[in-house]
Figure 1 (spheres, one colour):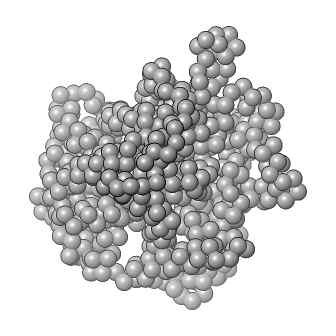
Figure 2: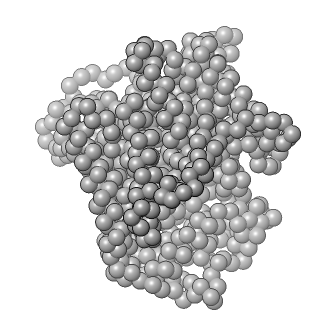
Figure 3: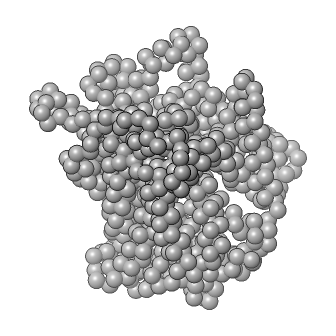
Length: 635
């Protein structure tokens, strides 16, 4: 039942779409080149992509000139945000942990099979010819380099698998888009989650007032100047640099404190800026839980538990935490989901669907159809129906947890390495019960589940939040974002294959991970791993306990979202900047109130913008010079 009139929104213009399309090839090529060829910068391992911010910065500067000299041609905020979202959605699916990792799997089995590893006899019969490239002659240039993608044999070998995976990833992204439509009203309008990641791009498109702030340019000079100096020093070592990375873990040489291992201190201005955007209780929780993880290492050294393989099983503890966070997010959303279900069935509800991107019934049909395509892909590949169901149930639990984390926390990263659905299912049931065809399918699905930094759903909901704040037509932005996803995938496949045939052996360690796991499962089949499940249960218990304390006691500051985040490798490079940001923000708010925070915010936005701009300039310069350049981030 519609209860209010449609809110006035701005339609997306064709020139905005054209600008976005023109921005995609260079951005995607830069992502592939920096992440897999040069293994530097890694823009898509961040929650906010610095190359997308740089693209928006160029457009915003252009728009300032248009506003002054050709006001009739000036771009609106909606048009600039549309370009930003197109670049972001195209890059995320071409990222380090989605398309790129998958491409490292598709030809790996055929090329690296040897009589010693017995891959051919172990699992080759379970690999359909349409899902991977098994022609060694066509793979020669791909793994040895100094070749050319655009040869008939190469194109013929890759055409069918690329089309199949293009359909698969497009359907998977569409299913997440439909889930975003269903959750949008609850998470954006009712709960009013903060979505800190969108603040910088939104402020950049508000107009000339943003760029007239002196604190912005002071922060910009700090971030940009630091990267400029260190970049010049990288090229010419005789030029002095400003060191910004230390490891205080080296100071602890006596047991048991030596067990803390590497404890980096990074002083990147952009990371302090991101930490400044985070809510105080969340930034506090992040660095406290980081110390909690270190305390577990010391406790293990004191008790001897660190002698057990994998202790403290950060992967399983984090997995349990994400399960708990997902179930909690669904629980607080259950009333909305019940109303959505009634709406789908045509029953009376109090939902206002006037300003939704599409009707809930259409979104549900789209979700079912896209999931059907995903399941059909896996079933045709030979996987069992229950294996597919279990795999994607776990996958969507993790995606929902990460999406919720981004919406509330504005987490700088979403690192979750080698604890995805395939590895967890083999811990629950054991590889013996799952069967070779399904395990082989797990190996090919490993590419986009080995880590969760390149999942489109968090960016999709952030896109809807930007549309809400920027009064953009949500029905149109939905299809623009998905269209950018599909076009980005197509460009990404070509860019990666081109780089592969030119340079050879790109990211082969990712394919080795997938098929080494498969080889181990088949040659040494395991049963249920109770140790893994124990740490998984501990993760759920600690998360739910922290949630209960937070809901029950107003003085309780620790937030469960920070527990799994603080345990990942990436956050080890960010904990100290988040700590510094928490200290600065706490002092400002305590002595100057929220007004002091708002007045100071442009300084920290400037530090982010300065590093993102200079970092992008170094990356683009590297493209033209054909060499690695200075990397402002090392995670």
